[in-house]
Image 1 (cartoon, helix red, strand yellow):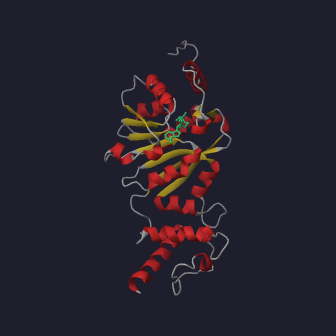
Image 2 (image 1 turned 135 degrees about the horizontal axis):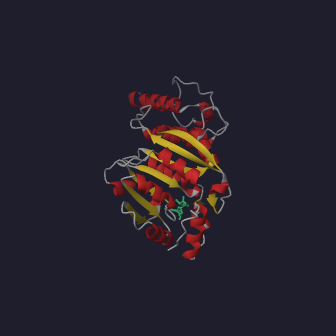
Image 3 (image 1 turned 30 degrees about the vertical axis):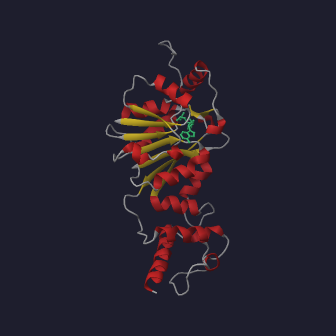
Length: 281
Ligand code: SAH
């Protein structure tokens, strides 16, 4: 193992580079391996997750385990999920004195988190590979038992789309999807230099708090998502055109609107009216 003198506390960047060297490893770009090397950002992640000694934390993409360690020091238990078996072994080595971590070698997209968390409340933390942000979020937000909190690092643009308000350019079906299920806060923008190696895009730290009860109850969720997706298929068109396949005549809704002006609440209203009409017609 790597040893340091008393005089010089190594930085996260040094530890990361030296671990990779000691185990003869290079970061794998195709797995989105950009390790966090900025202690301020690490602190922000920990603070945003509001980790307490009761918490079960699921960390997605635990990498070398340096974020995992800070989580494990504060939480009751951490489940570290990592697809790269070699990295997982390195982190097991590094963290062997920390006895409240379960290491799971798995592809998060093929993992049922409710099976791993067996009925316990849990939070999710992840410095995720950016190309799988949306499938991961879709899976997390539609779980039967959803996380209490999700703290994730994403590409800045994706974070902005998630948080976008109706009437803005970035507002789209992904915004509606995320905001239907969760409250979302953009915690902070994170510079490329906070990672090793630098990613090609800027990042943002995002905190999602899934709603315990739906904010606006939907009678038929499939219908709600069908309408919403159909509307955004043709972003420039008025709803009367993009929703021509649905039986919208006579509904109390302004169909001259374009989808980017329609809030989650309004999409729910529309879906419920259409549902009533179909049921009671
Ligand atoms: N948490 C570490 C590593 C972040 S890099 C840190 O902050 O430094 C992203 C990590 O996600 C990498 O270790 C990568 O191997 C892992 N990963 C990529 N695709 C994954 C998948 N489908 N399932 C689980 N982990 C994955």
